[in-house]
Length: 207
Image 1: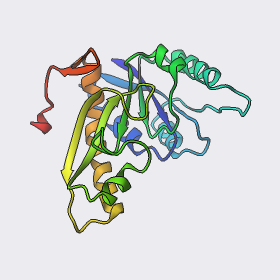
Image 2: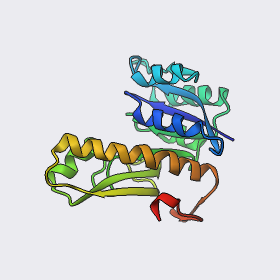
Image 3: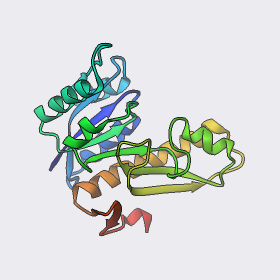
Image 4: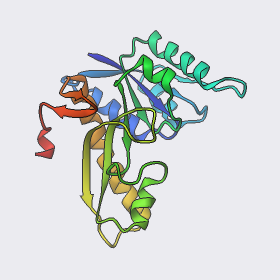
């Protein structure tokens, strides 16, 4: 089984989805540790209740980004982490971190990238009156939601929904897509060549 480290900043609903999926006997990964950059993140309590080591990793004002990331990598290495999953982590990771986990950092974004990158993607889609919305699991690079796309899930937007309802429907998709994509990644069902992702199988629920 592949040890996964999860980086969080907030309530941790995607962390909960990953933890739920990890309980299945056939799941190829387990959550080795959870680290937050926010001391009051509810995700830390979620992890602790599940018996997962969980920590607040503080960035002190005088600390440079590369120093913070080196310490973060050290903590992940303590738990043997081989793959990193971002679940609402609100910091942009730099070269220091990504060099330690090349093409092994995944993120879930609440839009059909490359549309609506960055913050408040659901609101962006709602204001644009998008007919379809969804979420994307991608590899993390040094850009803002620009890494190679592993998988996506979409829905047709009901015109009766308000912005909050749209966000909730997208979140429900995230909870299905992220565990499935992480499991496929840990089973080596994706191959990255020249910046393009090739996949060896399609999950049954998307066929």
